Amino acid sequence: MLLTDFCWYWGHRVSHRCNLFLASHDTHHQARDFNHASALRQSWSSRPFMFIFFLPLAFLGVSFEMALIAQFANTFLQFLTHNGVYMKPIPLFDWIFVIPRTHKIHHGNEAPYLDKNFGGVLILWDRIFGTYTDLVEGAELKIGPHHAFNHLDAWQSNVQPFQRLWRCLKSQKSLANQIRILFGTPESLEAILSKSLIPGIDVMPLKRKFTDKLRTRFYSLVLLQIASVLTLMIAWKELSLVPRIALCILTFAAVLLGSKMLYMPKGLSHEI
Image 1 (cartoon, rainbow, N blue to C red):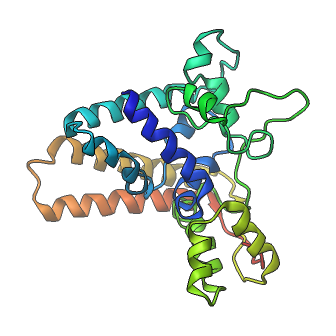
Image 2 (cartoon, rainbow, N blue to C red):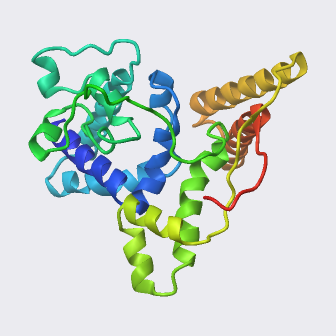
C-alpha cells in the first residue's frame, strides 16, 4: 500500500507537469464542484497513462493480485477525500494523511494552490518533496477548468485537452520542438498558444430549458446506461463477444447523447 501510494504521487505529479500526461488527467480537474461525484470524473485514457508509474511494483516482486488490491484501496480512499462538506483541519492526522481540506486545495486552479498536494492517501509525500500547502490567508481557492468549453459533454471533456496539444504540435516544424512541447510543462504550452494564431473552437455552454419532454428523454438515457452496465456486470460470462461489444457501444452512445442533451455548443473563436 505504501509503495502504491508512492508510485501514485509521482504519477500524479507528472500528470500535472508534463503536457502529454496532463492531457489525460485534465478531465478530472474540469469539475466545477468538489464532491464525491467529481471524484468519479476520470478520463478514458487515465489508466493507460498511470499504468506506467506502477510498473516498478512488478520489478520489486509485488504480485499482480496484491498490486490490484492496493490500487483498489488507494482509489477508494481517494474517493472519500473528495468530500466538499468537511473542510476543517484534523490535527496530527492531516500531517500524514490526505484529508478533504488538503485535496480540495489540490483542485485549486490558481497560485498559490496550483500544482500542490499531489498525495493520494499520504500527504507525507508532499511534505517531503516540497509540494505541500495549506489555505493561504487572502488567497481565494478557485476550482474549475482554465478554458471555456462544455464540461458536461463527455466527448469534448476527454478529447479537448488532446486537441489543444495536437494543434500546438502541428504548429511546430521541428521534431525536436514537438518533442519538447509533448514532454514540456503546461507553462511552455500556454506560452506557445498565446503567441501563435492557432485556430480552435471555444465551446461556450448554452444551457437548454429542462422541459418535461427533455427530462423524459434524459432520464430514459440514464436508465438505459444503468441497464446496460448492470447487464454487462451480471451476465458478462454468459454473453458472447458480439453482445458484449454491442452493450459497450450502447452504453458509450447513451453517455454521449445524455451529455449533449443538456448543454449544446455555441459560437466559434480563435482561442483554444
